Image 1: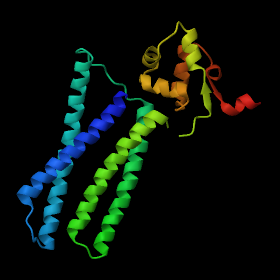
Image 2 (image 1 turned 180 degrees about the horizontal axis):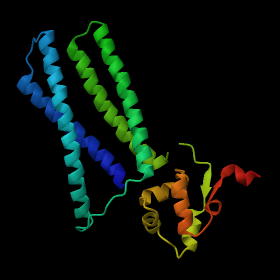
Image 3 (image 1 turned 90 degrees about the vertical axis):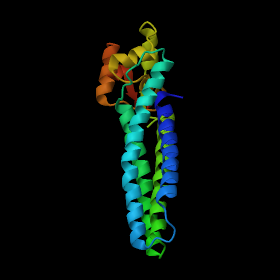
Image 4 (image 1 turned 30 degrees about the vertical axis):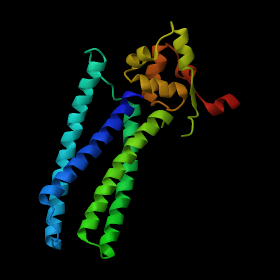
Length: 149
Length: 74
């Protein structure tokens, strides 16, 4: 398995673990049964707004840790990994796939709302869509690196 | 993923060029080894700029390194 494939898998794994830990923490500390729609909107918007920077920080930390681990595996030598045109095309195509999926999940979430479900259904669908989009991104990267573009 | 119609002689040229490694070629043109592997396998058609760089490493013309599949049918 190549450097890029390992990185894609590690990024996805850490993303899911962080999301589960964060979701568990939020549920334990901030979730209250019987919230009305206004309170639910406030709760979910805060959850998502905080989640975005948390995920960005996690991705940066993963990048640093991955670099250190690679350095250790190479006997202390840190090789500069070139990001070339092949990597950029794969990144663009993978992002396209995941964004397309996320757009559909957003439409799905809106459909929940339109059909009379609660705000929580809307936001949970968006979060699940986000996780699924990350899966698609990771799978797309591995697929394109193995099969070409 | 469909194979590229752009064929290349990079593997043979590397061999003829003192059995140059993929890593050495990658460093010479400023890409990763994985990109060279993908090009050699026909899984990726490089940009024109990279194609010229590759040809220059072997001191060849572009059409001596790369060819379009339909050319061989002529």
